[in-house]
Length: 437
Image 1 (cartoon, rainbow, N blue to C red):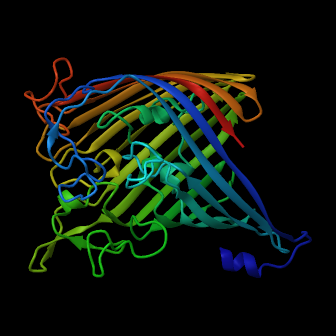
Image 2: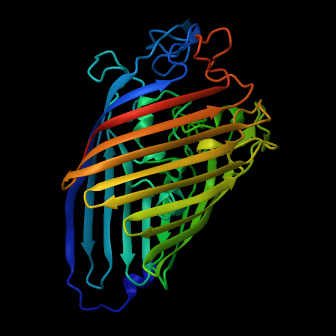
Image 3: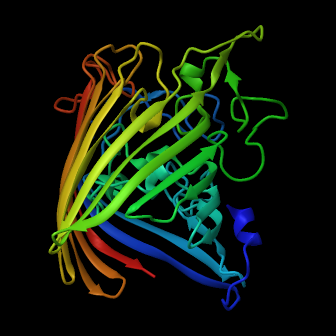
């Protein structure tokens, strides 16, 4: 597509040199949180990076007791750089770089000289370049969402508050009772994305990523092939080491999505269907023998959405042989099955809405009954000035995995009334301000 566009006959379009615009957002929320497990006793608490060999850990791997309060203030910001240009034959091109300031969750005080990392440490969220033609579509290459992973999804209603069950409430909640399996959870691994133009209301998208790595360099923390390397294809014990956002898992990932957008009797309609397919990292024993003990992730999603007179109603269904957060699963594990839905209303500067999701997942390997996660919310925002919103929101999220202890909790070490052996819940009310610029 790029080659054909570059060689196309020149048209009467004024060439434009690249221009640069800086944008982003800042938000500050006050939160009141009630959750189970706020007073665990005699549990393993891994400070900083948490290992027993962590020289910077003041607590290490010893059992401790702790108690959480209910109130907190959460702040966050991102700086976005947008580059846009136009060629003489009508192509547009440019780049997007998004810098975030929340890449280290575990440090208590940002200014502490002995902290391993500040909670407000800067990192790149997304960065990609693009070339686009109005007749041939757009190609993006870099660290970005895919068509299935956030660019073309339908039915995820989150245009109120901070996004409800897909919003910022998780900033106030400790694991495991936080976050759901959403399109953005697939990640921003380095990929090539193609997005078609719209024909008769239809458009399609497809992307390819060789692995889950982002950014430059190899990702290897050693001077030899190791479990952290971007290009690793097999590691020892992948079922324990290769199934988290911290370690590689998926390889040769392909995402696709087909979408239709139009209107009927004044009602705006959209529908989409898509999937993600990938290979999985294999197991290699100490003698170098390789076999596959994880399933290749294969996930599908369909969504519908309607808009009329300020109302937006949407929902859909997602299923596949992956765990929550798109983690590969063992052979014989339960498949993922998740529904989602929401409703919102916008009138002038006011937007109100509610949304939910409910899912069944394989959960821990030792539990044949699987894991459930579900949440619902209600929220609103008021546009006080251009780019400036006042926000209020309530979210409840629950988690249940019968018979499977979570995070080291047992019947003996959980405080009365806060038993986190196999279930947990969290209630968050937040309010504050968000400035987009």
